[in-house]
Image (cartoon, rainbow, N blue to C red; front, side, top):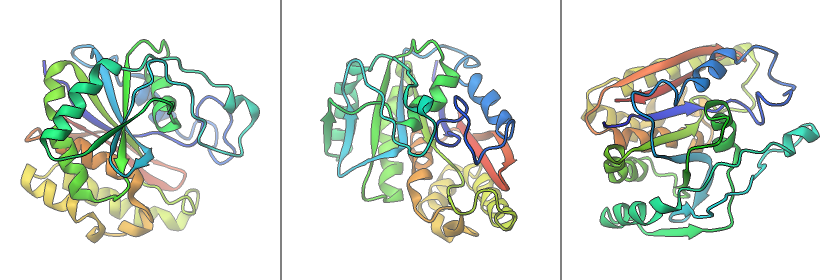
Length: 265
């Protein structure tokens, strides 16, 4: 059975496992509940997941190939417990060769990183979704070019994995202006961009691709994404979607901004 591709907003820092000063208690409860059912509600359990996190960029598409990935606490300023979190999922090293071949066939150079660990774009949402840490995970970098068309093409190359028992996850945030969170003046621009995003991803496939490639023309695009790394995992997931339709399983207003998650297929 073909698995969906999913773009999710991963919350903030080590939330919800330690207190985060800028996130009031319960503010992101809809997101936590959504993430908790992310894998459990799939029609079939995946044999592995490939995760594209906003928190890893590299000159070429790079695979994390440690069979027991360590933790990468790539956040600062939180209480000590944030740096003791553990999520010991195995690395899906058995997928690396297949992924490299698919990317090579699509014209992408690849590399491996045997030292890198799970960054918080991966381990935070998956600690909620998979607390038992019992699903092999392969993490793939973004390209440091941050080119939207290239990331859609990467997703298109990875699409066959969906028929091979691999869940494709893109982890970022559909709103990511750190200066805007918690400020009422951010609500209007974030709603405008979120409405555009919903219309774009639910367009027919060719139009969806065109709109996502030209995402900077969207209303309030740069107000919501001063830098695009938290949006580009969506482009990878949209590329892997092929002609599959999109739904938005979560749309919420939290910390004065509108945030959405997208599922294709």
